[in-house]
Image 1 (tube, rainbow, N blue to C red):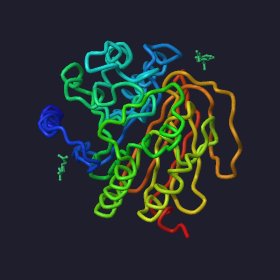
Image 2: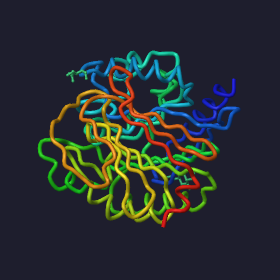
Image 3: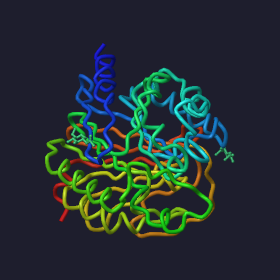
Image 4: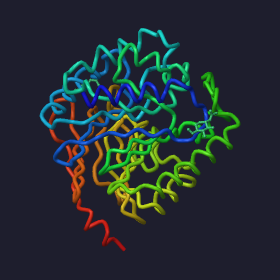
Length: 324
Ligand SMILES: *[C@@H]1O[C@H](CO)[C@@H](O)[C@H](O)[C@H]1NC(C)=O
Ligand SMILES: *[C@@H]1O[C@H](CO)[C@@H](O)[C@H](O)[C@H]1NC(C)=O
């Protein structure tokens, strides 16, 4: 019932289209036991192919066992070129008909990836999709306040200058994003404001592009320069992204931020990666991530296509507060 009312709230909040970068806010009530649990998957929509269905099956199984509250998508939701429009059947073939487990019948919070911008990006944000599958909530930038943790979703694609300067044969849907410098500056301003106001124990920022990655694409310089200083100054705990089709965990060397890539929702095995001192874990194949927050601890677990644990990491707020 709570879930239902909450969905109604979302739908009514979203009925007026708002094109500014200003963050819309959603409240997510948490479990009676005060913990927050969610899965993170990225770079997935390939009609079940490239192990997408196997990852989906394991997400369902693990999601059931761990009783998750919601699912986060780090973008590149639909390949190769996003959705063609609101009625693109790829929405069913790559999302609704793939993540069918009961445990995944929860709210999904999604950002756009660069591939999504190559289609009708506005369609993915449309309330019409929620009529087809009420789980779907994709916006450019928004905040989910889940009491103990606050998640700040950030639209990273417009930060990456090569999509503008060297688009190649790709066409990007920059409607509502231009002029881009104004858009990204406003976005960072709004993010900074939202982070400063946040009273949540845990602050998590979600974007499509990595800040730090040893995978194929590597660091995103624009985000290292413009986004990272804001995250460091505002004691963000986790930065979660996709884009590189792998699973990885890198620690920041100047703060307690953990960089977590969950981009293994379908096609993977790129076969190229670098080394880094601050690298805690890297897996080139498919899988997904689980996050659990309690008042005192955060736990991260990465799973592969067989549902096997690849990497587990936990720390306490006390430990983080004594850093430096
Ligand atoms: C978007 O919403 C914010 C606050 O909800 C409001 O201040 C702003 O004017 C809206 N922008 C547009 C373009 O409607
Ligand atoms: C699917 O996963 C298995 C196990 O990791 C792997 O051996 C296989 O290559 C994957 N298939 C594709 C298409 O990536």
